[in-house]
Image 1 (cartoon, rainbow, N blue to C red):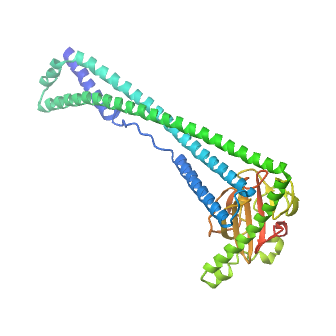
Image 2 (cartoon, rainbow, N blue to C red):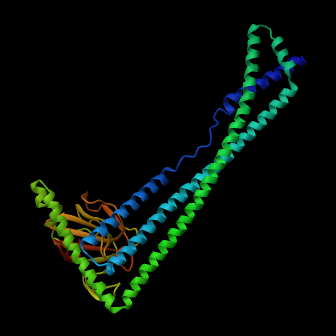
Image 3 (cartoon, rainbow, N blue to C red):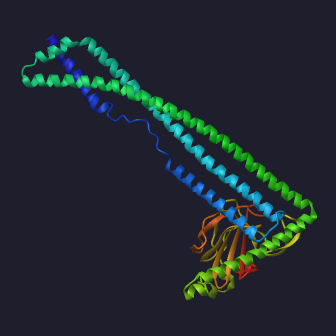
Length: 410
């Protein structure tokens, strides 16, 4: 009876080991960290914006060369300084997302490493139990298990179980080796990620310093202009020239667009204002955003240069990043950087009407795109010659700037 009980216990140990082999460690997987989809998408999006900003800056430089502007043009120098500031800001955004991604990677690896150490502890306990079993039930008991079988079926079953037990022992040893290698790989990966994180943090710090330096440089330059009356008056004249250049740009682009057209409709210009004109001039355009008008259309004292000048639109104050909406349906005629205006979108609405949206921090449309009224076309910023975050909004008939209040819905 004692031997039978011992044999039954031994069989139970074999059975437990078999179950353990089938279910306990079959789900073990190597350490793998999956990239965060949202962060990858954000990094890709910001890198596209950086590329677009580079293209806008290059286009701006080509335009300036074509206009034969002098190197000492005050607005050009302000714009170039602001462009460098915007590029530094964009680099900072990308680096911040990359740092967040690396930190998530490190956190995930640390969690997986802790989980793997727990698996190793389980494997070690299982092996210790096997050593105890082996000390209790040696080779003699294993042979006794076979020889005490009542028939051939029982003999084969006993041999099968002993084989399974041997496989289980081998499995435990191999798993310990695999998990040890995975832990080592994880440690190396974490060290590499930490080194990259440190390098990215240093790059971010350099970009912040560059951004702060460029911002300070721009502000210092503007302060110098304000203090020198002759420079301020010259800058104000340049700003008025820039306003005229916008009108000429619109005429040139509209003429080019119509020359490219092949149908009668495209040559005559699509009438996107159909239905709005009938309601009267005061209902042609929706407000591009809601906010106080900080500077109206007409003569004014320029807020930056403190000299008398003409203002070709409305300044609508709003926090940075506030969405700017298309005031009416139309086709995007221009999207890029313009002297004194910063980042600009111009929309052609047909019948020689167009609207101008300036000083934006980002744009969300491309030239040639047809947009509906109310569609987001960009965000409020402070690019160009500004004193703070706002949208500069113009209504143009041909090249002539009109008072937007005469055309905006009440």
